[in-house]
Length: 369
Ligand SMILES: *Cc1c(COP(=O)(O)O)cnc(C)c1O
Image (cartoon, rainbow, N blue to C red; front, side, top):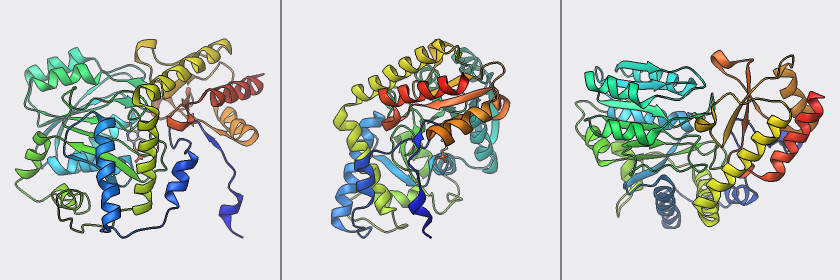
């Protein structure tokens, strides 16, 4: 028996992975080239230029990390943080918490400001903290996938820019679904993932380093403690006339990323963002008419991740089970303090389409009746 023969198409409406466009599946199946093949290097260069456009940056070091979003998170910290460095992490969900774990494992002296899950980071609190203390790095998650909250990265960036700190932003869920303006917002390191709004399968993760972040890497006292993610070496594979081998690039995954980015740019960034927003509004309206409330206040809602409160008397695990088994739709459960209390409905990338929203609303209506 071949297990792959029995995979059923499932509509992916959870917190990622999202649905993959047929052209991206086709891209993944193109013939594998060598990692130093000149034709492949052209593809790498094009990926870099597409990423710069989508991330809103002129940073030369704007490349995909081989690994999922968490590898890019790890790469962000491991390249610039040394034992004893002071780091401030702004937390209002799972991924802020994960950043603390990553930074602490590197021996950083980590400080946090925590905000209630489901509410946004308050820039005034960040300002107060930075008036009293200085940090090597300040980190925040743009789109907190665990709660559906959008954090005000631009405003936080204005505050961090007045200090010496490196500003690190997790854009795993936001990139490709809403504007991410790395240069304009004063972001020094920004990373994402392929399987959220970029709608490529998981496995490669965009990242960008500003000159300030690269200076921190170049001025390290010790080598980067992780060989695989050491950007001082990886850059030599992605830049310059003569490319040198570091690790074998995940060739076909990069074909997939190339195609996924190209689909977004061909549609037009503003059209893609509008498609996410329109479908989010349609979903919220439909949910409200079913008597389902949203967790997050309207001003801070993410278009691509909709956290909804489990209706009174309904069993959230049962809803998810029925959606999957009877309607072939996957949505997500709540995490941490929100486990059992919310459901997470993703409208990421290729999933964010009117017919998908309608299909989910009809299924939910049937299940709740
Ligand atoms: C999904 C996600 C990650 C982790 O990415 P993986 O691909 O699961 O490793 C990090 N941050 C945010 C905000 C995410 O949504």
